[in-house]
Length: 262
Image 1 (cartoon, helix red, strand yellow):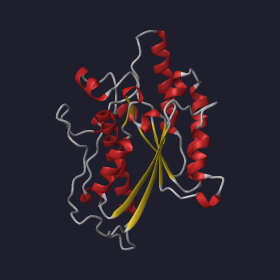
Image 2 (tube, helix red, strand yellow):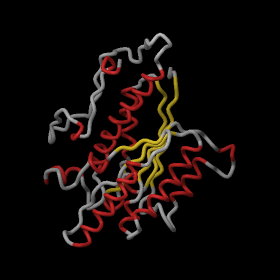
Image 3 (cartoon, rainbow, N blue to C red):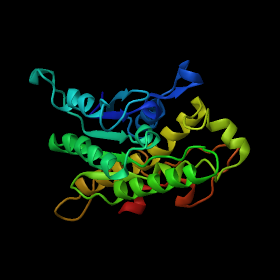
């Protein structure tokens, strides 16, 4: 019987919806994320709501803010159900529409702040690379993405956190075989790619929750209660036979042992 509840909103565009195969297949990363959370916290009732809309914009005519309001400020207050966390990824389509990074960032802050105002923690994801032909347009797009990602990473508010998906899931810095396996087109991932995305987010997220619980478990005498039945359990990114993992944050994973937190 679950001893607690964890309710998460995974919010964004096609990369949250899990778009691939020209829209014939949807494999949201939240499926893998939920699997990992249940494995890490078997006594917690994990509920994930996935709200990804392919092609949506953060700015202008986009419906990001309206959709976020439906979760955190519904027209009928009785429909409101609190979330513990919101994982937000947006801006890819805005950059592709030549929207200024500062404008995209300001729209993102409205979305993050709406969740934060309802005592929901936010994990904001940076925007991953896309494949584009070499030249002036690619240089400009890369520059604007880097500028926006830097704003996302340096934004400061209580209960606001970031995960650098751009660094964890590159396009150009992997082998051709891995690009074939994980990337469906120049923007979207394959089903295996979305699972990999969920795995990378999940490892960081699990570690954040473990550290949060560790802090909460400290007693006035400086002692802690046990969190897991097996306190020596190691939780790390699943090993990919095509890409063996080695120790280091540059590979996009973290290993946590309870004793390391004491």
